[in-house]
Picture 1: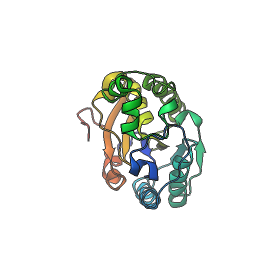
Picture 2 (picture 1 turned 90 degrees about the vertical axis):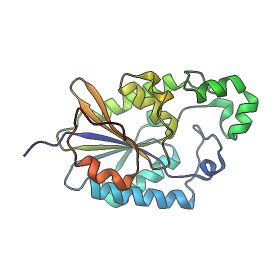
Picture 3 (picture 1 turned 180 degrees about the vertical axis):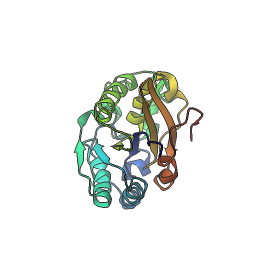
Length: 223
């Protein structure tokens, strides 16, 4: 039987009330909404089914919305989540807590540049490049012990995951074209001896079973 390669699944947290309002959370702590709790439960159950028969490792941002999402994965899989502050969302300084239209009025040039994918500092906080570097380093560290068949699930956030994936792939400008991750959307990657391959982007948890059963293929395209 052909060995199944290790895989890394980056899972965005479930919806919060601020997500629903279009409010920038950054590193402020917010709670999952009722919808978000349902999304987290469904994601945990989907991951349990998709990773059955594989060794699962679970890491999470230490912000509440990610930890609560990871707790739902733990409830479904029995695997404890290990928090890592490097997986937090991008720090956005004075933008945090504001609606997007308020940010656009406060810092119009910086907001437009960020939306275009430029590496600008957000509200006096952090740039995508700096944020992506800490996420990349955390994923590399947690993926290092993976063996064939293992799956690492990393519960994190939208902007930080997009920035981290771009750097893992060695393509910082990729964040210009990757669409935002939906709540409990996933990025699926295969670590290779020569780098990383992106097997799927914004994959819903319900579609992970088929994707995780597929051997990494050089012809695999973005999903």
